[in-house]
Amino acid sequence: MSQPNSPEDTSARKRLLLMSRPRATKANVFAALLAILLGFAVATQVRQTQSLGLESLSQTDLITILDNATLLSSRLDQNARQLQVTHDQLVNGSTSDAAVLKAAQERLDALGILAGTARAHGPGIRMTIVDPGAKVTPPLLLDAIEELRDAGAEAIQVDTVRVVASTHFDQAASGVEIDGIAVRQPYTILAIGDPPTMSSAMEIPGGLSENVRQLGASVTITQAKELTVGALHTLSVPRYAHPVPSPAPPATP
Amino acid sequence: MIPALGLLVGLAVGLFLHPAVPLALQPYLPIAVIAALDAVFGGVRAILDGIFNDKVFVVSFLSNVIVAAFIVFLGDQLGVGSQLSTGVVVVLGIRIFSNVASIRRHLFRA
Image (cartoon, rainbow over all chains, first blue to last red; front, side):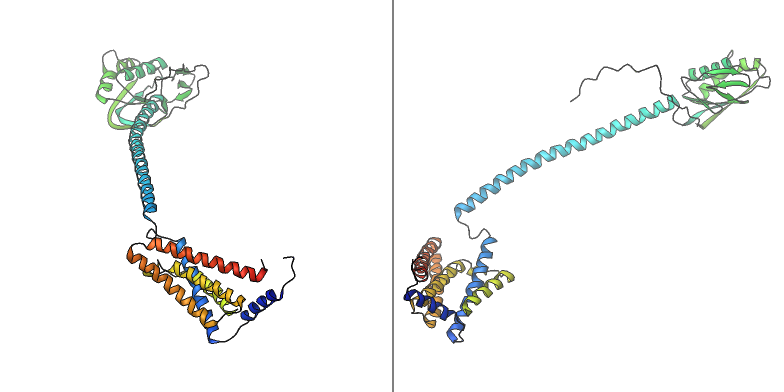
């Protein structure tokens, strides 16, 4: 490069320059046509190579590709089997989950009726005590409740008060109070359970009906195929009683 | 100049049109392209040598392409297509290298 351009070099460049000048000879046009064809072919071939199919590959390459495909296929098969197993487990699990949920719902319903936080309906009796002399005392009403429970009553309501485990009966100046709520005459007791059993339990000699009548009050008992205990008991969080944690159940597989 | 522009035009057309190579031509196109490149480099070298002739260029271009394609075709028929293709590519590559070396000597004196 340090040498000055020799005459031959200059002439070569000159010739190249001369040739690159546009000339409208027939051969030049033809050459241009060939060049277009060449450019087109190059671009086409490059594109073809980039999107090459399998047909131009050698046997060794094809075997390698086949091996890879087989390997991938078996791996995917294995994958599919595992996923199928997982799928089956999930399906079975969801059905057992549904069973657990159903059991939990049943338990919740039972506890709700027991605790008085759920309305209850079913066959039962309606007992009305008319007490013109105001002789009926809280212990008598409590006896009535106990008798009903003894006879299998599952949900009991006195007037508008739901009777639950913590229900207490008081004698107030205005009359009988249940859970702090004054109960007016006539006392209406709704009990859900087996109607014949409960009504006969009320009517047995020395039972509630007789006691009430001795006080000068009257008792009416009607059996119903369907009645609703609609009063609800408001739960309060226990302040002093805390549940003793039950030992953890053994882990099931 | 015009052929150089033609080359660019052909490249652009090929890139934008996405032509599909017919199946029958697929083995021959790459060899034909190499042969044409050999002819082009030979032409440039002839220009620099001062012996360029339009007619010779066109004829050598076409004959190069046709002969290369024919050799590959013959090889395919004889069952040695891939080997013969490799041979043709090697030969044409050597020619292209020697032509480019000659061009380089003319242009750079080195």
